[in-house]
Image (cartoon, rainbow, N blue to C red):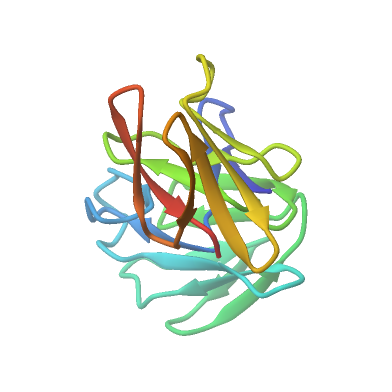
Length: 167
């Protein structure tokens, strides 16, 4: 799974298939530094690698020392150094594809990835919901029995709500 880590090692962020970066509360990777634009950049899984696109940021985005202008795209590989604005430096520590299925906690926090194709909710506790692929579809198995789950659907486990991402 794709993972960005701040150069100080304090923060790790699991990448979604499309991850927005910026100061906006709606950004997937929210940065609070005043030099970061509201919508700074976007990281996207292309099917075989990660790409980073500057979204018209005020103070620029750099990849391995190369400045990206608005709309410029750079391919990323493991170890790539990304700088958002002036001081938000990150390293792509895992360049693998996003893992599916995954769950996004609606109360905040990073995505929860499937392990060996199985997504167990809640994470770290007694499993209440198990999501797996069944042919062309995904099924959520719970005490109520199996039910088809679609991309973007909300699932509740242990009183917590999660948005399910399947692609």
